[in-house]
Amino acid sequence: MGIGTDFDGGADLDGCYDVSELGNITLELVRRGYSEEQIRKIWSGNFMRVFRKAIEIAKELQSPPLTESFMSRHVAEVAVLSGGD
Image 1 (tube, rainbow, N blue to C red):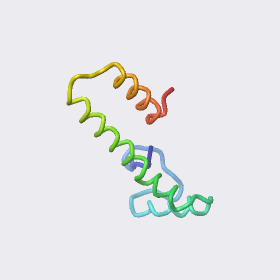
Image 2 (cartoon, rainbow, N blue to C red):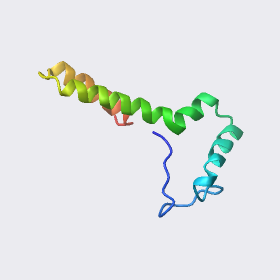
Image 3 (cartoon, rainbow, N blue to C red):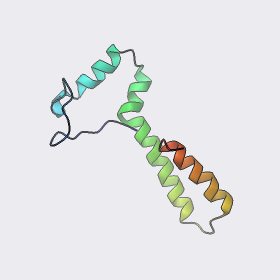
Image 4 (cartoon, helix red, strand yellow):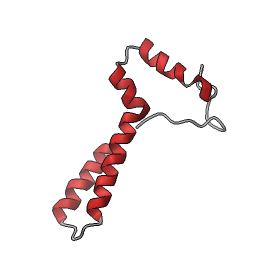
């Protein structure tokens, strides 16, 4: 869904050992041919898309009644967003 950091326990990534070197990830993505739009999605766009959808679904869940069609539509959608089958 996106890139996060775990500098106090995760595995090291060559060229990115602390927050001051996060830009190296962007440079490597550019070097490998990723577009500006793809890089934006990797850094924050995918997370924000899923987060906005989660908020939308949460608001709908707070407005009863829940219908069978609502549940079936959103269960499948959440599975797709989270990478599940």
